[in-house]
Length: 239
Image 1 (cartoon, rainbow, N blue to C red):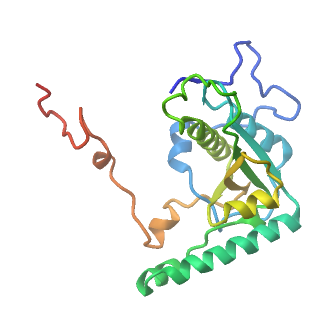
Image 2 (image 1 turned 90 degrees about the vertical axis):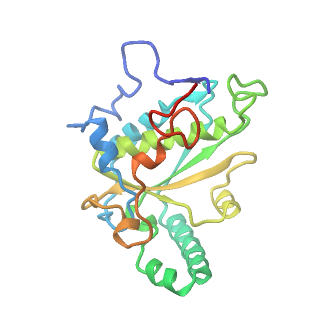
């Protein structure tokens, strides 16, 4: 995947504007990664200020992208009416999923909150435009998904920058894509790939919600590492 960071070569960072002053303090990258949580119930009901939001979006916009296409856009949603409409839709989708579960899984799922759409007071909808960059995109010729992967990298940048600012992010995925496309007047072939609830929080949970509620536990790193071939163990002969 041939990617290019959006960071310019000049000495002045892209965020050096009145709306994006350096935050008072920033944690290390590894601390941000370890602290990151999918926030739902911990939003404190206040709205993220414009300067912090600009810094976070600036970090997202500096993500690497295939062919330097930067195929993402960010739709910032703060209208209470739109937030309420989307929250009702997500609630309906949650109910449909709950009804599909066997009884024991339904019992586990019921107390799990899946969104903080209205309590976060800000939604950032990340979109993906597969046409950006034209027909001949360097690095995407044989693996078309690299375009979508690029937009997801922007989401990761946004999320970690938010954690460094003590701002929570919750990724909402209980929605019908056509519904969200129409709600926000997103033109084809652009796709909404994530609704992110973004806002100040009372705390970051030490343990991810899905582990706390017993839905699914994390996987050890050792189970995810393979050597030389899929399933290969460390020290296996390559000859």
